[in-house]
Image (cartoon, rainbow, N blue to C red):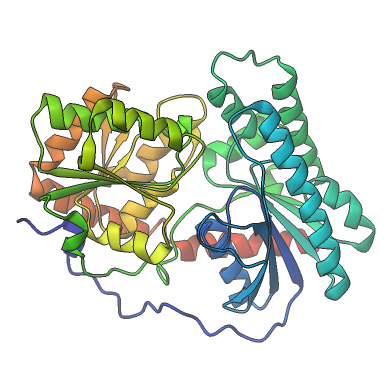
Amino acid sequence: MTPAPQTVAVETSDVTLVDEMPPVTREHVLLLVENCSVPHDRRVWNEARTLRRAGYAVSIICPKGEKLDLDSFERIDDVDIHRFNLPWGGERKIDFFLEYGWALSATMALAMRIWRKQPFKVIHVANPPDFYFPLERMFRKHGVRFIFDQHDLSSETYLEKFDGESDGGVFYKLLKFCERKSYDASSMVIATNESYRDRAINECGMAPDRVMVVRNSPDQRLHTLRPPRPELKGDYEFMVMFVGVMGFQDGVHVLLDAAHHVREVMGRSEILFALIGTGDQKDNLLAQHKDLGLGDGVKFTGFISDDDMLDYLATADLGVAPDLDGPLNNVSTMTKTMDYMSMGMPLVSFDLKESRYTAAEAGMYVKENSGAALGAAIIELIDDPERRAEMGKAGYERITGPLSWDNSAAHLLEVYDRALRS
């Protein structure tokens, strides 16, 4: 069997798994995230570790995870993580109100508790959602700075999720209001790419010097190359994988259609599709999997640890980013794309502006948003091991070079310098 492209020789001797954190010499900062637990949210965890290495004291408030990150308090790498229960969730609009209302109340209570123990100088908010701006008002008199880290465009996500909704609806207007208030409250705004930055400046009126790009790149101290684990493939010759959130806009339902096309139409039964992650579409996807009769050819792992996820990345032959073309996805940077590249894995993606910028030569781009077109592209790459190896090498060089987390870390620290000087 042809070796997976991520087995190409690269120099990794300067990479370590765990840092020794320096003494605290700078301000205490509080990071807030609502839609994922930490350290499972790798962007927030990379930011927290970067700040701690720079001498900041760091605390995080986040929800508990489904299977991991279950402790109410945990200290990892000298970062304090405070977690709250999140009993609400679902696809209906009322579910979002219940979830967000509960999360805001729990976060405010924990923030006050942390403040009484050790006052903080910065509140750093990762969206979605965009409703944490009242915390800036609560702590403004104490000179606390507010940084809005815009991971996603909440209003556009809403339109994608509730297909057919008018952009003049009350919920949409509420989301736009919250985004505007978050901008107004911020000393600095962080964007994940230039498309988001341009939108913040040109459409939302933010001053250019108050918006900086901190790209979503894996930290190579954590995403180290490792040997493949062939047993993860079972009896299959090849493995194609997806990792990430399973919402409607993430296109996993199209990936299942592609798997059906590959297996049933093209007759390629030697390929395992491994789907890692969870989300509000999980039940619908399991039902689709059953209806399509995909059997053990498509494996849902659910929520797994980062270490296990890295084993899958090191073993798979090809990654897929099935995010559908649209106003939101076209300008968004997909974390999964950079995860694949960090392990030297080529990928197939629909032809999105930011995905093409991120992956460049590491990606194969499908113009037609269909399972059949996606499946055909998967087979084209599976049958061309030399091209996969070249693409994987190009992606790894890009993620450890111009798109490295070290570059993003420098931008993050500049954001903090500007915010604290403001």
